[in-house]
Image 1: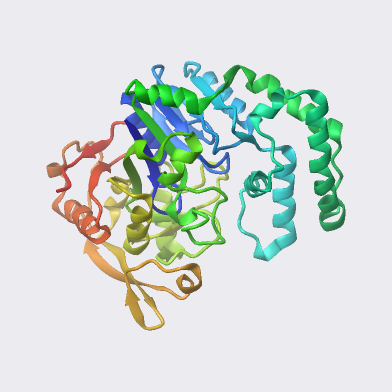
Image 2 (image 1 turned 45 degrees about the vertical axis):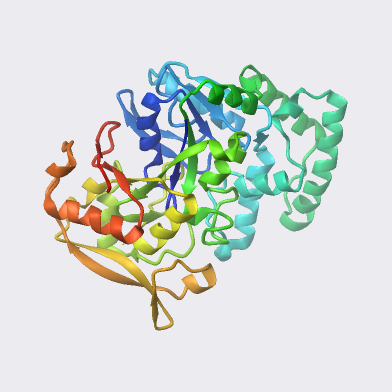
Length: 428
């Protein structure tokens, strides 16, 4: 069976932990979109890890980890990650890379930085990992697919020449930066070929056989619904679809094979980067939640940037779950909230004097003000609790109130960063 694990909000919901946990009973884990611009934090018996390209199931020796065709593949970063986990005692994972994946080039990273510099105060808050330039080239049909590394030298150099003609116009006249040459780009591609060649595979054919054999397969998404370029807070979004539906495309499987969609939802809100964030909080209130949050503070796993903090947003989460096609909600970092006497929950948006529970387009979102309902806190540490009925009453009330508001079943409750700190519940 194929299960997708995706986020309902702005990213950083705890997908890495849920993937790592479910990988224990899975055969194959696939990253199907995004690049090394975001990270999934994993805490297990080997230690604490921030993964950026590797799927979050690499810590099991019975799994195959796959980089799907939808990923923005930064080959040097992928192999640095493999080396880093090996150095911490993790057995070398079995990895396959789709021959149809496209590669992040060094000039993509440069262009990302140059454009943020040019935009200055009106920038998109990019991680400067080359993601937007990469996907721009992919859809302009001037990207480089892994399979092209195995083309003949003359054909590859001919394409490089055509691509950098365009790049050099921008470098010279828009950014005033050094120009690219065919030989340096070709040399880079040959370095990438040497690194990736042992792992290249026709992934869609591999998965077709795996599905026929009844293997358990996880699709792991990056970021969350609010960062989807079609359905998120455009233009402050990422450059690939963050939705479970894209998992079929980004992995190369039929859409009807995705039978379960686990949507990860944080017990409060956080976001990295620019964009509308209606339930955002500031000052000491935000600093306290940020300090206590996550698995060591709410800071970006890739950038280290402090995350923007907010109370739980039922409007955004209901929409985020709906657009994902959620079958199960995994509710994470609930243990963080144990210090609060009262917990505000955003249950509606007031826009131009009217309260709505429907998530609006960005042009209306920027006028939205949060409408809160305040719930009593439970004022104790819930880590170590393994049964739902053993949670404090106010904690259960918080979960059940949110389930009612978002309209999707919360079947997993994470009450700590560890792999097995999870409570399963019947959400009926």
